[in-house]
Structures are given as C-alpha cells and as structure tokens.
Amino acid sequence: MKTDAEVHLMLRERKNGKTLEQAAARANMSVPTARKYLRSAKLPSALRHARDYRTRPNPFIADWPWVEQHLKRDPALQAKTLFSLLLEQHPDRYTEGQLRTFQRHVASWRALHGPEKDVIFEQIHQPGHLAQSDFTHMDDLGITLSGVPFPHLLFHLVLTYSNVEAISLCFSESFEALAEGLEFCLWQLGGVPQQHRTDNLSAAVQTIEPDGTRRWTDRYLGLMTHYGLTPTTNTPGEAHENGDVEQSHFRFKQAVDQALRVRGSRDFADRASYTNWLQELVRKRNGTRQARWREELAALRPLPKTPLHPCRELPVRVTRFSTIRVLHNTYSVPSRLIDTTLTVRIRAEVLELYVGTVCTLTLPRLHGRFQARIDYRHLIFSLMRKPGAFAHYRYRDELFPTTSFRKAYDTLATQQPSRADKEYLRVLHLAASTSEADVEAALSLLAESRTVPTFDAVRELVRRPEGPTLPALVQPALDFQVYDALLSARCADG
Image (tube, rainbow, N blue to C red):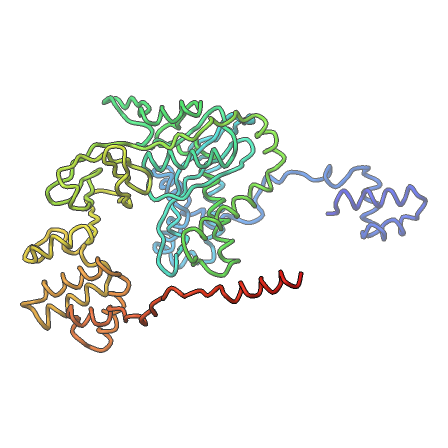
C-alpha cells in the first residue's frame, strides 16, 4: 500500500495538468493504483482497516493454559524461564529459535491480563525549589592511582529544575561526608535552593519509635538551619521519590565510563589529578544546561557569609597503651599524651586532636568498626626499652610499615631467631629517626643480594657520606692607602 505522501504527490501532479500516466510515474505507482485512489477520493490511511485476526496460528496454543497458570501464580516469572521448561517437556514440539515469538506472546498476555504496575507520576519542578543528593559507589569503574585500586564514593547533588549537578569525593556515608559534601557543592553552585531532599541516611534520619516514627538528627537540622534549607526525605524503600539524583547517578557514571574509554586509561597520577578530571567533566555536562540554569540561578537564595565547616567533637582520654578509641576504631598517639584528655574533632577524612585549643596532631580517619591505625613512630622508642613486648603485641602487624619491612623480619626470624625481634626493632628505630624511605631502599638492596637485614647492615647503607670539608673563612686585611693616593692625585690635578 502506498503512503499518504505519495498519493498527495500524484494528486498534485494531476491538478497541474499532467496525464494520469505522468502523475503515476512521478509518484512511483502504477496507473491502476493511481486510478484506484482517484476513484475512491481517499488517502491510504483512510482505506486501512484495523486487523482483528491472526496472520498465522499461535504455535503455543497447545500449552498456553499451562503458561497462563504459571504467569497467574507468579507474575515475576520471566518468559525465558517458562520457555526453557517448555523445551525440556516438549523438545519435539519447540525449538530455541521460537524464544522471541514466545516472549512476544507473553508480553501481549501481560498487557491484557497481567497485574497492575506502579505508576511514576511526572513532577513539575520550579526554579530554585529543590535539590536532591545521595552517595554513589564508584568502585565498578576500576579507577586506580599510580596503579593502586582507589575505592571511593561520590556525594552527588542535583538541582531538579535545571539538572545542574555538583560532586564531592568521599569514602563513607557518614554525617561528616554528607555535611562537607553538601557545603562543597552549594558553594560550587553559588546559591541555596529552598529544599534539600536526601535518602534515609542514618547520618540525617533516625528511627525513635517501635512503629517506625522518624526524626531528623540534631546535627543535620543544625546544618539545614545554617543554610536555610527545608529538609525532606523519600519514603523508605521508594527510591523513585529521589528519582532525579538516582537517574543522574546512572547518567553521570555512564559519562565517566565513556570519558575514561576515550582517555584510554583508568589510572591517574594522584587523587588531585583524578578529582580535577572529574570536576572538568561536571563542568562540561553543566555547560549543556545553561538555558534552565540561568533561570534557576536567579531563583537561588544567597549563601551564608561563611561555611559552617561542621564536625563532631568528642573528649577522649589517651590510654596507658598510648592509644585512643574513636567511633569503635583504635589510633596510636605520641606517648607524651598518655593520661591526657584530648578534644577530637571528627571530620570526613581526618581526626584533629586538640590539647586545649592547640591542634597537636592530625590522623587519617578509619571508616567502619574495630580497625586500628598504629604508627610505629609513636611507640618505637618505648619498644626499644621493652623489646620483649613486641612478640605478643596486640597490634604487632601494624608495626610493619611496608612489605619490605615484613619480609626483612621474616628473614631475621629464619636466620637469627633469637635476635630477630631486637634486630628488627633497631631497624624500625632507624627508620623513625632517619628516613623510612631510605631504610626501605636498604632493605630491598639487602634482599636482592640475599644478605641478612641486620641493623648494622642496614645502617651501613643508610649512613650518609660525609661531605667535603668547608674551607675556613679568614677576615681579609684591607689596605686603603692605594685609594688615598689616587684621591690625592685627583685633587692635585683639579
């Protein structure tokens, strides 16, 4: 059957005085076909009738009652699963090539007789009204820094009207990561919307009643108050209510993956270069949303005068083991702080330790629970006085800074078992008092030469050669008689 456009062309040619044969040829149709449309005075679309019959018999008619029974019993059953069962039961009746046909029949049955589906209601977004945020894991993208895997998350903020987005790199879904990420993104955008919607993060929402009644945490409410934001959250289990940011997660990670493929490598020199690369990608994506962004920017409220820099403060007493325990994790501190009560400011990635108002130490923060971060520099001077404590020290494994140190100790334990602990502690003391990198390099050289890494052997390699002796400087004796004679002669000539 011809299209409406072809028939319109034929009629226009006839109207311009062409013969029927000429008009039919111009419209790429036969003369009888052209004559048919002239006589009927109707277009092909008007002559087309809806088909209410099958053009071929249903090949599954014999077993369709069985298929319907299973679809009614469990609507989640996939057509491919049912077809595999049919192939097992009737290998002489069906072939694998009929899978697509079976899937179409099942889809048609579900459209006519299947259960009701959830409806997603399209929302009307207003400029400057709502921002949605959430965390997303980036591990599946295979990012590495100098060849080392870099597991991390992104805090992702999206303005629902313009879809302009901002990101912040983080390592957990803690309140500190949420607060610092939100602040960073808002100051990147340069304004504050009216509402902020987040998922049911424990950092922001807590359940207080057996019936599931929830309320905002005090710290999260303080953050919202500082920026004048109205906090909202989606219904538990209904992720589509936070749909804008969920869809943006998918689109953004897809864009990151494609950009990495174009780049030809997923390895970056360091965290800073990777972060800058991500921010540049965000800038390019936001560049395609400028029309709506101008409207949204005009509707955003101004930022407060200063960021809040939120953190949690805890008083912590240093134990006699020269450790502190913060959020179920253990950290070593210098022994001079034993029995001191510190104020610990907990931030997203670091712990700041204060004695009074003085920040005395900053430690990388551990995420999760029941982990330990023991710095051998804090303990080695005490261990040198008590070397017998090393063998059964609870955190002994933390006293091997790198694999080279661990291998060196294993070699000492094999070659000199009675002196292994003392020799290793002396090597560790050398690393603490000079340079860990130099000691590690010395250990690697000794391992290559199959030499036992005793303290003397390591010290010999680490000892820096003495520089050349500097010459002694002598105060020069200045004789001004020559200048006086020149001046006298000059004056006499004048």
